Amino acid sequence: MRILIGIPHVFRPQEGSRLSSENSEKRALKKKALQEASLGNLDRLRDTQWVHRYENNRWFTLEQSASGHEVNLQLHIVEPWSLFEELLIEQGLAKEMEVIRHKIKDPTDLPLAVTRSLLEQAAIDKEIDLVIYLEDDISIDDRELPEKIKHLVLKAGNEYVFMPHRCERLSGIGDVVLAGEPIEKRPDLFWATEEELIIDWLNTPKSFRRVVNPHSGCFFLTQEQSVIAHNYWHSRKWQIDYHWAGKMEMACTGIFLPIFKMMKTRPEQARFFQVRHNDCLWKDVPKP
Image (tube, rainbow, N blue to C red; front, side, top):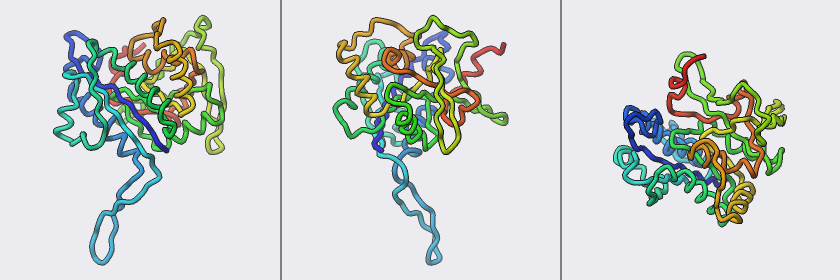
């Protein structure tokens, strides 16, 4: 499978800000998260692997093909608000990915620019099978996630976009599912219909719903869905006349609400369909 991944990355410390991308105290955490979102995702999804073997009284490591994917990972940055140069020196990232430098006065406009870039590339290159947008602290731990996306869309149809849950790891206890879903239902919101789909995966039923908050800091679109989204906004000259949450949320969730039915698994099934959030957002939310 040919996969195109786009990651917008900005780190711009602002005094008093609680956003991770603007918090100087989270510099080390954000640098490690960026490494996981870039090199880490490439390592987990790439179509080669190394096998450690023993033969003729010696050990050696052999490269071989794996059941992975051909991945083009693009890191989008706005200089000088980036941790990329630090990782470049430490990890040699330049050889592993395409780095795209944007000249944008307001770096908060970068996420939407990345979404547009991904959709425009998919509209031109028909050989791309899957388009993935990831915030710069999201890692794909599940190597079968691309196959799951293709399976779900095949069963449900192009009008449905499936959003994984973001999860954080609480050492010694388990995962924290960042569902972000309010307890109250919102019938006034056209996308929060509570429509439910049941789709089998390996003879096990998986449940997906249209929820109030489908945001997960990422999106996964098939080639056909990417072209649908591109054509929708291209015909409107990319003039978006509404707002949904913040600019980051708009770029990977809000922009698709008029086009697709956006589905999430129930939190109790999050392990089937999740991505890793390499941060500690759960600590920033007070307990009820």
